[in-house]
Amino acid sequence: MKGYISPTVGQLTLTEMVAELVAFLAEDPQAAYQLVIGTDSQERYSGKEKLANYVTAVVVHRQGKGGRYFWRNGKKEKVLSLRQKIYTETSLSLEAAGELVPRLRQRLNGLARWSLEIHVDIGQSGQTREMIAEVVGMVKGNGYEACTKPEAYAASSVADKHA
Image 1: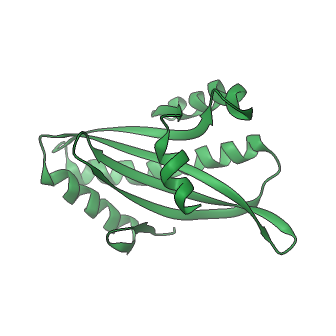
Image 2: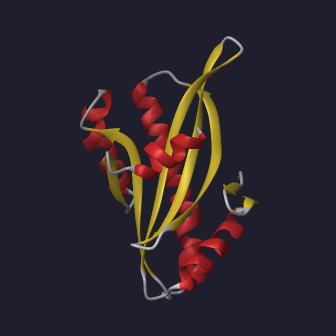
C-alpha cells in the first residue's frame, strides 16, 4: 500500500495518517468534523502512451474552524473511456475509505463526532451528468454518502491539485 503525503508533516504511512487524524480530532472533541475522501486523475503522456495518474485526497474539516488534508498517488493506467476513468476514481476513493474508516473508528472509539462523504468528480454539467445516478449509487451501495460537483471539493480541488 502506498503512503500518504501531508503538506504539513510530509510522507506518512496509513497508520501515521490515522494518528494525525486522531490527534486533530482530539484537539477539539466537542466540535463536529467532516471526513471527506475524493480521487481525481489527469492524463499525461508517458513516452507514446497516454496514462492517467490517479490521486486520492483525505480531508478532515473541523466545521467552521479549518482542516487538514493528506493525499497519495494511486495507480497509473491507460484510460479507455471517461466511464472507466470515473469508475476507477470512485473505486480508489472507496478503497481508501475501506482502509481508513475501520482504523479510525477503532482508535477514536466514539470520542469525536464525525461524518464521512465520498466526493466524486462528476456533476450536472459536462459529459459525466448521465453517470450521476450510477456512481452515486455505487458509493451509497458501499455505505457512504456521496457528493458531486460543484460541492465535491476533495476530488475537484484537493486531489486535482496533486494529480
